[in-house]
Length: 309
Image (tube, rainbow, N blue to C red):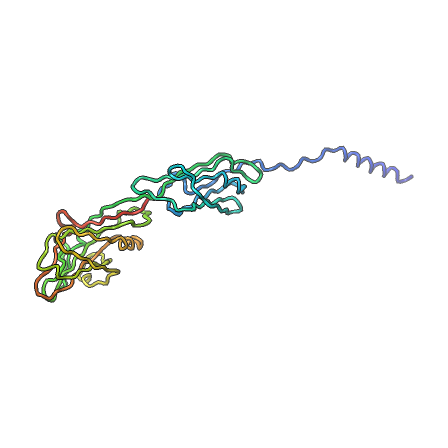
């Protein structure tokens, strides 16, 4: 009898608790994801052929839905094949083209695009806040005609005489024991910053006249880095050399792409060469007089084609 009030109170509390409404469930994710960063940036120029497209999101994404919503477009609008990888726990998507991007064949820009439709979503099913689009351009093919550097070209005789002011540089032997070597220098400072590679390079020299029997001699061209011309450059060690076969006056053309590319890759500010000959020992001067930058036309020219922004 003494326990009945306590039992009645407990039953009353249970009844009241049963009448209370259930607590609402925690709200789900209703926030739309956003693109917070993208590379290449919209309007970027000079993009390299091995570039990837990277999109960063405000939250982890549904990877399958986001990949399906992505397109990389060729300049003609054709979709390009890409492979995908994900970083930062699903917040960053990397799209890698399965084939290298093309460069422009001329000075015009070749423009690619990438698109992400609003059907991209997060794991909760929230679609992208807004579709995303950007265009970018790859490297283009640019040509440069670089004149010779006056004061850094000229001739050096085997006796140490240096001529950097004359309009001609003698290449050949001068008697049975001596010879003259010709030097030419071209600034690379005007090549654009961001140049990726040297496509071609042609050195053009002009032989004003021939003396004696120049065909009796053998000739080589050396790749040097001599700075300002002085007597020590007559016998300075070259980084590379190649035979040349001049047999007439007029314009001489030499392919020097690898040498120019080497100078550019090393950060050198100029391209420089030395031309030298054998000595036939007949005691008579044999050789050619080559125009220098101090001469009237035609003067030394280095024609260079590069891929650059």
